[in-house]
Image 1 (tube, rainbow, N blue to C red):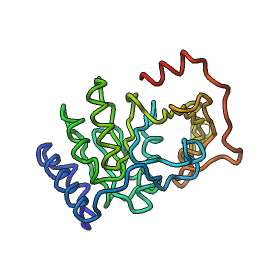
Image 2 (tube, helix red, strand yellow):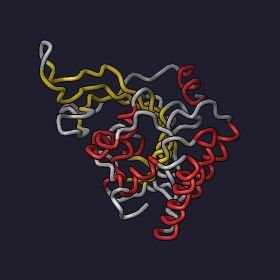
Image 3 (cartoon, helix red, strand yellow):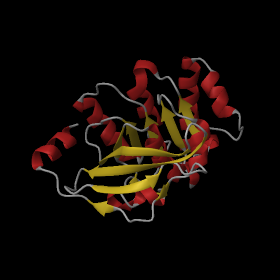
Length: 246
């Protein structure tokens, strides 16, 4: 992490070994500069998502799963980043810097590791404690023991983990459905925004929450439609067990 605005682009172009070394060096720099964060503290969260999350905010020391939408995962990163937190993006295909910046992500305070290779969990572990939030691409198979060790590190060092895909012991699982892009007419026009339904299943709550959001609106922001977030019917116990296990 650096004050040089070209640093994220330079990190993207560097060889993988250099990117990993740069990420670890940047994490160490942030750790020395800002110290270790306090486990379990709420992070600034975009209001449209805060209304859906358990506790009303993203929290350090916890992991969150996002299914089927890089944009939704990036929106979770946007609140803390816009508030000045250091963040990381590791192995996320389709991560768009321009779209992320429009949501509020400060790229100058973001460590980018586009291709961590087979070392994804090790890279994430090296960033935990130095960064407030780490966004991770589809991790592939992760064993319970490996996920458990990382969960302990998240709690001890005070970092939130956002995973594009299922992750064991997630605090909440977010999904996006019924996406409807606006702005295109009969074969002409420009996309001006997408309305979508976001549903959140919290690990400690049987009743999911759901809301319609602009993700994004015509200016790239994430905003709630005027209607308030609502609770859904309680899921069957079998469904809850499968979700917690996944």
